[in-house]
Image (spheres, rainbow, N blue to C red):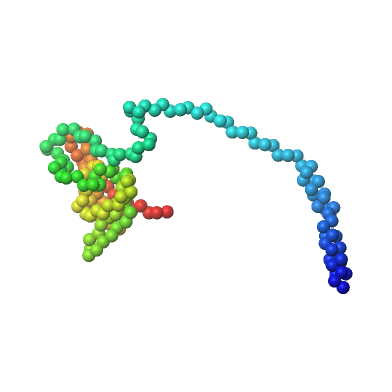
Length: 172
């Protein structure tokens, strides 16, 4: 009985494995199609090496240094001037472009802003402190922004007040 069952099973398997005419026709049709053309190679532009002068150019292997404020002309006495005798704070060595607000923290009504520098350090600042190259006094701290009152040189020896906002950096 087992032999009869096994032999009939093998016969069925062999019958299923035989090629059909439809499959053979399809394979022949696909092989007879013309080959698609090969895309041409892209044009290679000539490489021009940039001339590097170590006397004048910044070395590409050194980290960038903090920006320094531009020297001003001789100060006039009869116009708006920042306090030149004030001791600079740590965040006044960076331009506002190199600083980002990361968040706030507070206790008992006091709100501090968390400011990240380009060097990766996080600073806690409060209202009344300074940051940025233009003598930026922090006038208010909100959950989504820090407002500054900056002194911008007008090029004639005087200074102009400007309100600037440093918004919180939202991670995507």
